Every structure is written in C-alpha cells, then in structure tokens.
Image 1: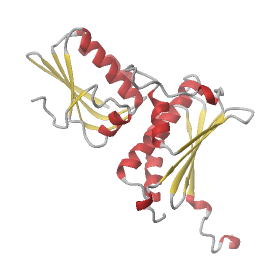
Image 2 (image 1 turned 45 degrees about the horizontal axis):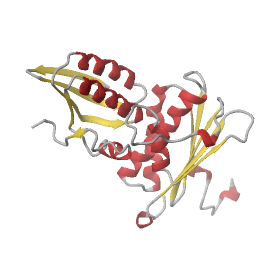
Image 3 (image 1 turned 30 degrees about the vertical axis):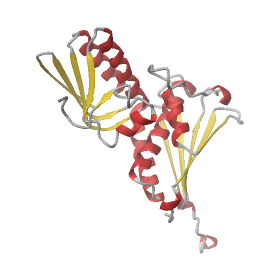
Length: 106
Length: 152
C-alpha cells in the first residue's frame, strides 16, 4: 500500500493506493494517528486507488474517525469505489462515515 | 487413470494451497480464491466478498489459533462445484470453542470483531470443526444465486 499526503488551508488529504489489509493496516494506523494529531479541521482520505479493504482496514478508519471527532474535526472518505463500498455496507457503516464516490469533498 | 474416464467430477475441480501463517501471504490466498470463484461463475461482487470472507478467516487463524506466530501453516482447500464453492481452512493451532466465536454487535461502533460478522454474512454455511486432536477445520460454502447457475 502506498500513501501520499497533501495539505492546504484547513484540509489534509491522504491518498491511499493498493490493498488495505492485515499486512498494511498497522502502518496506516500509525500514519492516520499522526494526521489526527495535526488537528486539521477537515481530513479527506482518498480511497479511489484502493482495490481491497478488510476488517482491519475498516477498524483503522473507525479509529481515525474517532480521533478526528475528538478534536472536533471532520473526516470524509472520498473516491469510495465499487470494490470497497460493499465492505462498508457489510459492516453497516455506510451511514457512520461520510462516504463520497467522487474524489473531491465539494 | 482409466477409471477416471467419464467422471464428471474429477479431482482437478479442487485446488489446495498451503501458506505460512503470515499476513504477507494473504494476497496469494485471495488471488487463488478469486480465480476459483470465477471458475464457478460468481459475479464480481461475490468474487470480492468470497475473497474477503476467506481472508478474514485466515486473519483469525493467524491472530487467535496461532497467537500471531507467522511461522505456522494454513492449508486452504477449494472445491469448485457447478453451483457452489466450498472452502476448507485447516490450522494446527489453539482450538476455540465454536460457540464462543461470535460476531460483535454492529451497533457498537468500534474497531475489531468485524471479521466473524463478515464471514457469517457472506457465506451460506460456516462450520468450525474442532473434532480433531490438533487445530481446527473451518468449512465454508457459498452457492451461486440460482439465476446465475450454469456450472464450471
């Protein structure tokens, strides 16, 4: 899994590429914790290039959601494609996360 | 060999893979499950879900049966039938009481415990067989939706 970050005023975008599974989730957890510690109001995680996500990946995103909510920030998952959206549905989390099919927030 | 002639269910409808209990091999397992599910004729959504279910089951073996030890082994056995895929996962680790393997309450939004829920939601049949000296054989079956059934 590859990870890229870009920051602009009040927004940090984290773009993921590859597979988010038991192998890559620990690294992602550390990266997202560091992102949350910056306390930027808007956090966007771009999943457009993620072809697979398992329960450990979902758990990592839940942790991130909680960390961001703690400081009053907002987490949006963008680029949620047809391969991974069903996993959010299986977990009954499609209404817990702000999920966008588009790659942008607006 | 000759007694195989005319057998509509030869052994080549099953595939087996043994992998170390290491997360880096799970992609290999998913690749095999994906290919087998395509042979049976599952659509893309079901292929993805089957990969997820088997992956989650392997993750549970690594975490719970082997306690995170990456040097043990997991045997994956896939049987491709015209109407269904049967998956057997064999481990040689700690046995769990099948009645204690529970999916968590989804209303409780927290990390962890989702894997068992995914497996039960995706597969039609899930049996944890601990009736052996060591380890567990997990048997899972997924049938194709009736309207898609033709056979491999």
